[in-house]
Length: 384
Image (tube, rainbow, N blue to C red; front, side, top):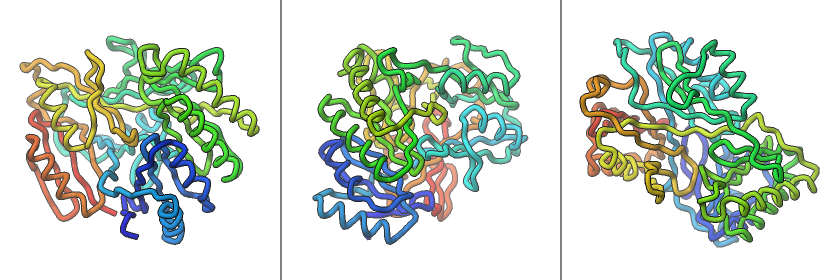
């Protein structure tokens, strides 16, 4: 099965596809439960722990004429170093609504990036240059604020800090529209429908794929054993986006109607949008390096510094101006990124980062710690 790779201990592959419906055709042929599917307008990622299931998927994909591209497989994660890992873990578990796993804190639906917390051995008292935005439905944000015992602060009045000063902007979302009350606007417009069978879930995926193609609107359609998440991606529902505004609300309403016809009801509890910000003295230089390393694309909007995964499988990064004299430039962050890639792709990623201005800080057989020109770190991992 040359098209499958082990990523985070899971057999993973990506198939290019010409439309949502072309990818949904493969979903319709999946008999196995327990397969994670991330369907996009340009293809789909599949993850399974079962070699037999992987083989059946490969055969079905080949029958449909789909082509695999394992070179694009990656997982972007976040790691904290903390003097008191237990206290820091407790804060982020609550803020993100994550679950404890052997690999760290994890989104139960395995959509948003995994977070790990490691022991800090030296003092780094200044604010990080890397920070987190997490957007959840307003009730969930109220609960996070109550659990933290803090009053939100900062320029937008939404910042909270863990016990060691690592900050998150914990932003309350709101319902998308009176016409599409199942949906929430959490930077991205999204809805989750729990399902009771693989047949029911597959029917919803196929219906949503057709509606998205008809509307010429790219969606994230993520199938899990627990249900189906439908996500419009960051800001793509807003008035100034292509097919945004009233057109997106109409698509959301039609998807909602299709779900109701299948007897489905929404559950807002799993809804979450997570992105990472980097304070930068030279945002253009850093953006180029991170885009090159991650295979990301720049957001085309003026005055927006976002870079994003063209397959919408990994988190958005954005850059904020930092004064060159800011004392934080002299201190290592307590936060760094981790990039998990297939073993046969690691050296290519390292070479790419070095060609764009990165430098190696530490290296072993299973990892390579790199720094960008301003000291922000990413650890390229191949551990299975």
